[in-house]
Length: 249
Ligand code: 13P
Image (cartoon, rainbow, N blue to C red; front, top):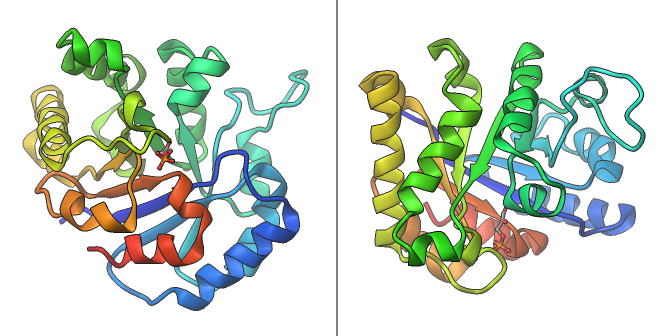
């Protein structure tokens, strides 16, 4: 049975002090359950979050990493640095990285390979823009994003990969894909995995939905067969809201 996961992507929010307050609140609200919980604070708060959450079942992920292990890449953070502070997971391919930092499928494939070479778990994001959906191209866009960045991987690598479908038009807009739109795309993604790998592999990969998930809509979205959880932006910045979303399963 694949895992149910709720992950919080804090993006560029929360300074050190506010981050520690949020982490402590999350810890006090958190009840152990079969739903996996992951938070992705900014880089400046990762070490503190790892330390505060030691011994709890809340995991910590980075929001990005470089494809090189080290070197002359001013301002960047490597997989080795993340691993050295106990971070075991990384978000790659977020639409904001693609849009504002020119991250391409080819670059993401390199980051994926580096992360996997160091046993890093990956939450891999992708999703169509509004113009793609209006043109009826959403499935072709999604298929090419996952094929280009991930389908060179051997089957064994998929144990480390969580997919996150985030339609760009639903991120931070208050507009969610309807539960049926999410299910339709998630089923398509799973079929694409089955066609390129196997049914068994496709059945085991968790596919999260992201885009304006709130306590008020999480239950209905998560009730869909192929939706295995959520990647939460805005609502992950509030401990009560995020915990309500975790408990929506
Ligand atoms: P919102 O939940 O704020 O729409 O953000 C979703 C997202 O981009 C998570 O990675």
